[in-house]
Length: 181
Image (cartoon, rainbow, N blue to C red; front, side, top):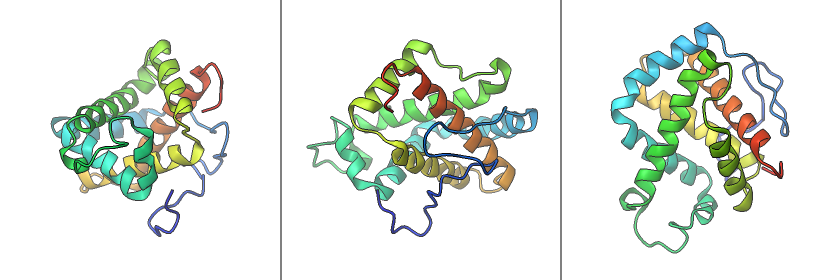
């Protein structure tokens, strides 16, 4: 992880000021947060493929060694922007993250199948994802959204998306049989 990036704040403080490195402290997702997430996702949805790619490019800009965690990137000489396997993966991850955020309040929980979360958690654990990686991903997600919706962006929007991401990560960790994510 590149900790020399002054724009990267990985102090592990959430919107409620109580985040911890392990066992994310999360709050209930409010009606106001839901409205912000829904409004912004409806605006971004049409550009999901490009935004997903931007999201992953930010992750790799901040943490270049993270590329080694992706089998399809390990030995590739193809520029990331042109990698035919990264593009669909990035879109899928971005859409799943955003759709989960949109439905968070309606269901009161992360709306991804338990088996999917367990598989995601196991995969993340197997490739060595640690809390710092989730922090880089959180930062990259928020920056991607901020750049996609500059006129809508606000501290409240940042908190809404941050809380949704935190709940997704917490649920994924809890769904992982080994609990080592």
